[in-house]
Length: 390
Image (tube, rainbow, N blue to C red):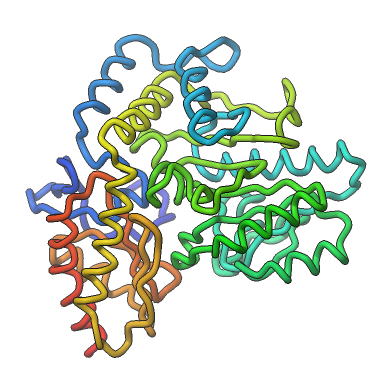
């Protein structure tokens, strides 16, 4: 009997080691990893630069706390600010912590402006985390059920619908911010239209709201740009990051620009482990390798290849709804629940995921090669065909 708390429906496999885009289970079987730990293993597995950086830092100091200066943290904040054109960076340990920081910041911003009960507009089908505030901001009733009372102060509207946001602006004077994912990951790989994001930026400017973008899953090069919103050529007031930032070492970040900068002061927020030397060393190495090896360009090219080859392999198949995404963040939507494909793929030596019940989610490492894209399509497309024909 395992003493691990039963909070996950785990697949019947455990991995002993990895190499590049492949993982090996405890019996020696090899699997092509098209999930990368849910968009986490940016550089694949056992990347030599990352291994060396972690080992070198472990031989120096792992943790000192934020009672003291941390040179790696300052270097990482500078690098993220440079890449994003944002002003300040709070470092934490996960995506939900980064989103908690954003929600707290929005409320504090509202109170400073004299708003008694600040509210944040959030989206249907969004996913922002599993802490109480981020759970409440999430647009998935299944995830929320049983955890009531939820945190108040959220106004929910349809995703990618600017008229719904404008209507709230006319009727609700407690709103101080909008929180959304440029690409909804858990919600089924739904990509916001660039015109919508630009219009939302204008609405936020007009009403002096904070535009807060959750880039926990779509940030750090996954879409082919450093951050998903950069396709729309805009600057948010708040951006949250995690997942791929440390290539497997837990780290999160909440970045601010413009009117959101300077809202927090000493004592308003904090983290014991956040931005420790080890996590920051992993993140700095991730960013350096992404740039040096042109992995953003690779993500864009391999994503286009993957969508194209998968579309060709599934052409004319009844039951295929749509193949969509940006870069190496891809969803293959079917017309029926398809969780079975996860175990089918596992048996065939591939790691995939199904989200929103009917969407096969593909999130390969950004080091994925053209040959690995073709191998994935050649292995997965027949399984999808077979499943839809049953």
